Amino acid sequence: MLCAYSHQTLSAKNAIALDKDLMSIGAFSIDQLMELAGLSVSQAVYRLHPLGKGKRILIACGPGNNGGDGLVAARHLSHYGYQPIIYYPKQSKNELYQRLVTQLKNLDVPFTEDFQSALRESHHVVDAIFGFSFSGDVREPFPSVIEALKTTSLPVTSVDAPSSWDIEEGPPKSGPGKDFHPTALVSLTAPKPLVKWFKGRHFLGGRFLSPEIAGKYNLDLPEYSGIDQIVELGPSGQKL
Amino acid sequence: MLCAYSHQTLSAKNAIALDKDLMSIGAFSIDQLMELAGLSVSQAVYRLHPLGKGKRILIACGPGNNGGDGLVAARHLSHYGYQPIIYYPKQSKNELYQRLVTQLKNLDVPFTEDFQSALRESHHVVDAIFGFSFSGDVREPFPSVIEALKTTSLPVTSVDAPSSWDIEEGPPKSGPGKDFHPTALVSLTAPKPLVKWFKGRHFLGGRFLSPEIAGKYNLDLPEYSGIDQIVELGPSGQKL
Image (cartoon, rainbow over all chains, first blue to last red; front, side, top):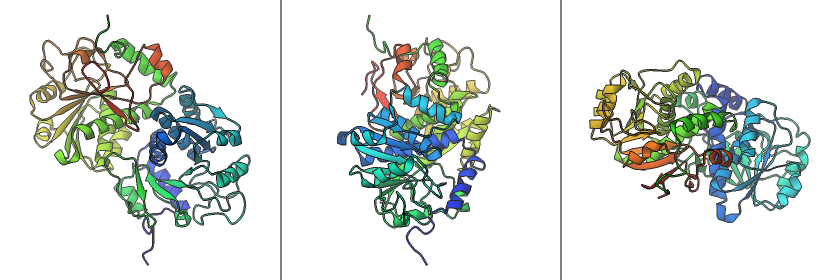
């Protein structure tokens, strides 16, 4: 049976395996991949929320790679002329993440510990809390953050997955993420099965996949245009 | 006296010092900087030579960082739909460069040892042989390559410096680079004094400078637009 997103999604297990392949077979460093992933996210925000619609972008960063993508996106958004503000309550001690934080501080990008107050002063929110490796429960302090993302009237752009959604089963049946439906989603490298439950604007980013790795995971993805680092997808996963 | 490019160029010594600052004060890894520099070069080639004008881009890479920028640019150009071909006769054993080569081979980008034959089959050439740290003599096998770049009727885009030009004194008075005037130049981070002798189309790339580092070197550079990783400069260094 041919259905929407057939040949276009990566299971949770395959997403983890493909990520490893990018660094082994693909010979990419995590620095390179995160730079290009964050650049894609920044381009999606620019397209969804042009500078004239308000410059204050609140970026909620989780403790892992999804948060790192958010930190990189924030740097690019700052260069574009936005005023990002970062909520990053569980900062990694990993050297790469510490460098990404320093890069933002060098651009005078502020960090906040008060998500709710920052939300009230923002124009757009980026959800870079959990990505393709998420499973299980949402730990503190993120339940109230996801609750706020669900109820805010601001547009919310999720990175790789709406945080708290199951990668394969989509929106949770209970907990803070129940009925959390972000405005937009930027799938990185390839969409995950959760996109079947997602109804907002959907972008693909991470323009670094080789034919060999795409073939290994039976991925047949839409083509990017020109120099774009993102491509917008329609409800069946086709290029818009 | 106010002259063209005052407050906009970096001496050879300062270019080396600023590069170190980007990695210390700036907290960037070489992977990040090279990724963004190469991305800038790829965007300049896309603007100078749209896909419809011919896809075959010959990229001549030197042994150092300038060559690395060329390798990254080649990868992005391949993703855009060009058919890059790489001349990289003095390959670094450094792990980063080896990974950049693998990334290209994974995209089936060919490498050639015969620059002259590749030149005859190409539509545009990228000169990524020597950059801001060049001084002294052009060593083998590059004299004949620069001679060919000088006499070819194809457009040539140089990365950071026309190869063999003195960073501060511009075109050499003798040797293969005498009278070498490339079609376009992509200055990375900031123009070098040699731009005073350059008459072609001039782009600035490397959108990662913080106000602190720019201030330290008394740089007052034109602003980039939107999500562009390059900005085109006029004859006095102003934004076009």
